[in-house]
Length: 139
Image (cartoon, rainbow, N blue to C red):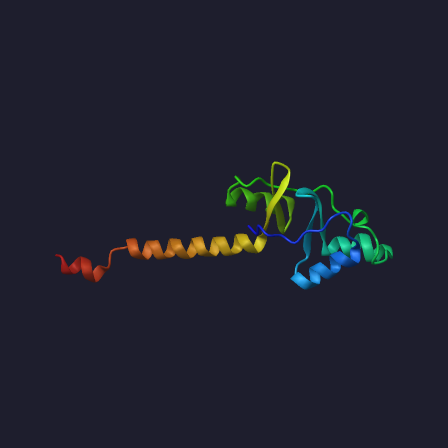
């Protein structure tokens, strides 16, 4: 999970969101009021609800925000988060604790975690398997 997230507020506009997305090479930004998550804006939101509707760069965040945001709690397991993301067909999952944004889990985070778990499992199985040459030496 990424804890130090780039965020915007309802006081920002479409242009400012696009600039932040470009600067940070991201396509998803949580919208907060203080630390409380109130929605998200994706690069797709900017295109579909913003530019395709011929809205200007000064258009308010509230015109392009996705307010019905799927979230998870910090105590959710990696498997539960992955299942939720698959079920909801989302690539980023805001983690909310007591109404406040705690971080974001991206599908790439899960892929890296799974790869590390797979590699650790493979290493452990190689360590646990008896070496046939050593086994034969004891007999």
